[in-house]
Image (cartoon, rainbow, N blue to C red):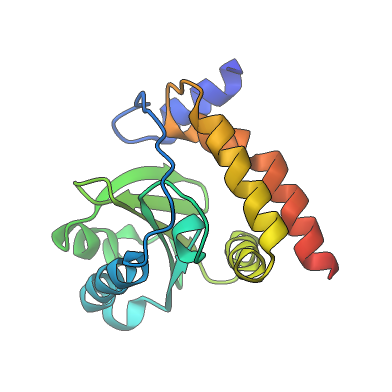
Length: 181
């Protein structure tokens, strides 16, 4: 792995890098209900400070194989005043795991959910939503993406971020098609 990437991850991951075995499972029909319960917790914790809570990534796409981790997108007005959202989310059972410029990520103690937090207006949010919406309607790209994830899951990863990095090219390719037509 690139030394710069290692140093960057070491600077933003709270608790350091964690070796992980990636497990891809078939789509589970209860994932949307699990998301709804988690989203309710976030909304109750933050009230109107939660500008938007969306189900994103693979568990939000019916029929797409995925890691059994619910990914959520939380939009807040501003990331900088962490006191406006971090303590409330921690009290609600979310643990701050990543603090990087423009992005915070929390997870549940059970590691069955990731909550990605961004400020309103960021391009990352449209990437998540455009990819989700395209994969919900485009079976060839949904199958292509699932196959790439299965291939990558057969490898050994010293941190989940390296697995995510390895998917960057296929995601960019799919997003180009989604935005072209």
